[in-house]
Length: 324
Image (cartoon, rainbow, N blue to C red):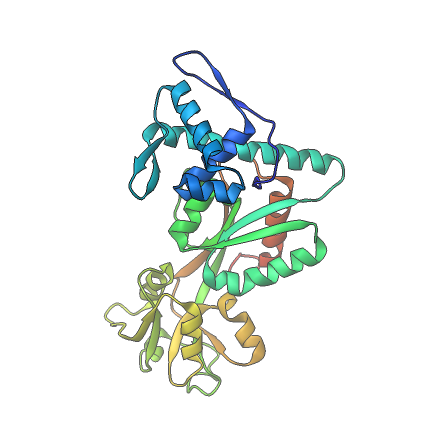
């Protein structure tokens, strides 16, 4: 990730009708920021430069390429088809530059850099927070940026180079992404300590249907897994549906509500005695926790090191089969 203050000496050569031109680091950053902000004024403010300077770079490049980069709209700028091709190349160039710098630093025996991780809200608030804290304690010179989204957004952030890694549930196969590790979670019923089912060693889904259900809504992949565990003729009728796992856990603390999560999601609440996790029997449905990175290119030394660290910390929670 290139910060606004970095000086990027790398350049790329682009064909134009008048012969090749050289697009230097400053222009790379200017055009990338305008594409992200959708506004020359906002980009200039973020870059701490004059808007006229940014606009000049864009106009000069459009003239050289003999093609518009941005479509001027009443509410801002939008990349044209030519601009989409250009911005992909620009971002790959900036990322390659940062990887090169990190690799050179690692050759000097330094362990520095920035890692951008895309993940889901429930993981960010729980296990990811613990992993990040442990990593920062051992490697305080590495900065971490955590970006939260749903599973589609998380995958896109990595595929587009906006994040180095993704750690998320049930990510779909994507040729742009490479799966570095996968852990399988068995679901369980989650209840308050005073719930009638709380003393059970295991529980069947049919037992749980006797109580008010708090379920993930259909925007979360967890709902698909829960429905796959229900008996064939059973009807899951929730009293509350939500895309917030924090709300699901909060409601589960009030008897007789019951929800369904995996053990990793409720580690902290189990440790504090606020919630009880009861494994579900008679089901083979599992949640998949994935660690992914881009299929093209290579991770920076810091990104690769953090990925290995996170994988080891997650593996410590699982049995030898990779199932929690």
